[in-house]
Amino acid sequence: MQLEPQTNFEFDCFKKCQKGNKYYKGLFNGIKLELYKENSQVPKYVIPIKLQTHIKWEVQEEILNGKKHYKIVSFKFQQVKQIIDQQIAKITCLFGEDNILTKLKEHMRNKIIFQRIQDFYTPLQTLGKGASSKVLLVRHKNSELYYAAKCVDKSYVNETENGIESMFQEISINNDLDHPSFIKLHAVYEGDNTFYMVMDLLEGKSLHEELSNHKNGFPEDIVRNVMLQILTGIEYMHQKNIMHRDLKPENIMLQKKQDLNSLKIVDFGLATYCNVDKQQLYFIYLIFISKMWNSWLSNLIDKSEKYDKVCDVFSAGVIFFKLLTGKDLFPGVGFNLVLKLNKQCKIDLTPLQMKKNDPNLIQLIQKMLEKDPKKRISASSCLKDQFFDKVYNKKEIEPKIQQTSSQKKQFFSSAGKNFQTTEFKSDSPSQQNNQQIEKGSFVTQDCAFKGFKGQQNAKVMQKFNTTEFDHIDLTGSPIEKKQSKFAKADQIEEEEDK
Image (tube, rainbow, N blue to C red; front, side, top):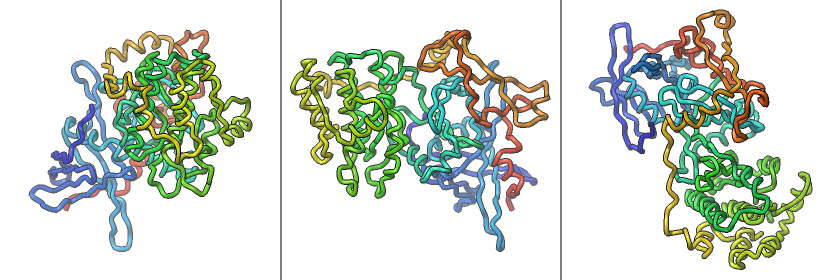
């Protein structure tokens, strides 16, 4: 469920006390959550709505229409109060109806960080992995819809300079991008060892993989449609004062299998706002781990001068060239050679001429690959070029319709029987020996985007260390874990109304 943006959301809730329930009126306005006692004009609690804020939702399992349903019964938050000369952490727990708290959770999504992802999602399969993160296929427990969860190791975030600030910025940027060229971020959770960013599931391959099957490039009509989607996404992004800084075919995904009309620009880990005073240029070295598709060095002729969002246009020009020719703009074997070519930015468009492409098209690509960023064409100007006259301004790119749960099930049903699974493991030795533990499964076969193969070709991967997903409760219901961070805080003191 996704709600339309709303200025205010009012709701009723109550607090269980020794002398009976105390009733509150809640008011959420996107900036803060205020909780008022009955007949009071002054809020008893004020919770700032920011990513540093944590809220824990208490969930109970029930049987609804013959199926398991996980309902939200309460939410907890922690506030620090000054008592004499000491700061004491106070935990407050408020109860409410499931449908009301579910709406409140939806209003808060991406604005604060939730806890206990395992209460809402089931992990199924590893879709991909990188140096500091993995992407898991997860299924929402109630809706049974499938999503992708980007799992970022907290140790990497904490050990990286400005790591937590960069992650918060990535979340903020994803929230700002509401356009068909980008996937939606649905929620952010924090576990003991991992941050989880739950996003739309993309079933297709990357543009990089599609290009590997077209060694001589694509026909112009296909290239026109692909570049239209990329450039309209860049144009929208730049209107929001955001630059991606890592555009490459690996970061352009197909939402649907083999459907080049469903492109999505992904991975905003290196993106930033254009008005940031200090550009984190040390990240430049991270980019070149992959193939040199980026335009950073081309924008750093004078390294004392701050580069601009037109760096994304250069990257798009490199992709444009590859789509038409099937060749790399900076060909070379080995990191050092490709780095040298990128620094020199010596561009040879001969392959385009050999394919007898329209001279006007070649001129457009030349403008996109202009070495001087001050002279480089903008994304909006690219879209006004006659190359896009056949499609641009005649039809809008329609957002993809969300697939239903039954359609998602059909997509995965053929692969499900081939999944190689392991049982969930509990952190508690006593739980490991209890025979009444409800069993779940975690797919460890890394076969995403490569076609699902039979057991004989299965490659078993090391299980990703996510203690949140490993936990299984004795009762089979989602209850809080004794070792969790929030549970420890609960033992400090539960605040009582006076």
